[in-house]
Length: 368
Ligand SMILES: Cc1cc2nc3c(=O)[nH]c(=O)nc-3n(C[C@H](O)[C@H](O)[C@H](O)COP(=O)(O)OP(=O)(O)OC[C@H]3O[C@@H](n4cnc5c(N)ncnc54)[C@H](O)[C@@H]3O)c2cc1C
Image 1 (cartoon, rainbow, N blue to C red):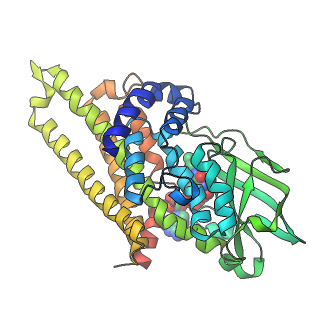
Image 2 (image 1 turned 180 degrees about the vertical axis):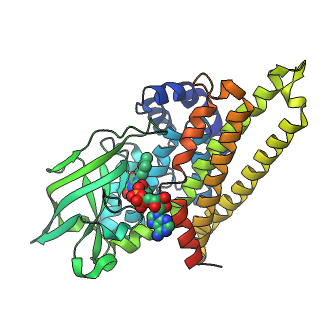
Image 3 (image 1 turned 135 degrees about the vertical axis):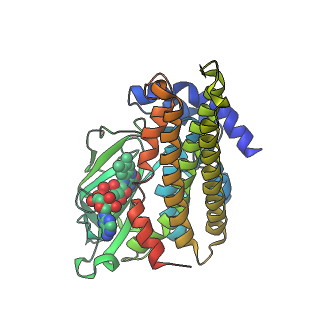
């Protein structure tokens, strides 16, 4: 029922704008409005904080179905979970009450600020600092590649509070867009997910009350990594949706397109490609849904499974979307058809929330 409901909404209210959002590299406001009106913008927020209380699998299905028509728009529910999960996992009751209610209501989105210009895969090498000053913390630094920066009201920011302790000297904070000293860079000009704003976040003597720290001092990096264990599954869902969208489009196209006097779908060479695409997508789906169940239960092998799902599904998305372009021939290579956008959008799923090389490092360290 959830899938049907999200699919109908996505096809009616999000798909019609997907090409323009990409072409104009603009924020998918129509998608945000439609998702918010239907309480689908942050489904993961627990009921006790005013949210829909969707479990990890339901959240995956929402993201998958939105990504099937518009990958940029799927980053609305996905990044709302990424940004707010540190608070849900490790925040005080007061922080949860304060920030989850407006997120659930649609009054403010949440972003996640871990990466920096010189700290990507080696995120613990960050330079952003937080220095205690009485009942306040003062933050200074630059966060890079922040999805929905400038649009979101709330930001989970990881910053160094004790430089002598490397990852154990990093703490997490909630920063608000309206805090004095917060500003944003120009939107990055990207290959894909052009409708999703990616910007730098500048923190210039941002003074915030001490109770905005998420969890204990020095636990921010652990919270950031624990968050990714759960949210990499949402990136797998995004990849899955992009791949399914490309297969669905190509499946229709090959029945219409005629060469050598018959639909190209009649050629076995085409049928084998479609069979492989569907097989890979199904394998990615099973891995992703199993990982979502592990996320929900908090199973001890979640770290491996989340990394495996993200890595596998994103590699599948890249292969399937590239094959979809191939199936449309020259037409697939143009912006008159959606599959080239899907191919460009698929690429990011191999890069963010840890590149697929990093996923392999994570898997190797946590072999089942
Ligand atoms: C569109 C977009 C949105 C993003 N959104 C967010 C966000 O909302 N919040 C956030 O915090 N970050 C975000 N990121 C950042 C993203 O997570 C990083 O770009 C990613 O982790 C890689 O870091 P890097 O770009 O610095 O690459 P680097 O770490 O410099 O990596 C370069 C290459 O080296 C490889 N490499 C690095 N170390 C190793 C190793 N030990 N072994 C083998 N290979 C290695 C990498 O896999 C990669 O191929 C986003 C990025 C993009 C592009």
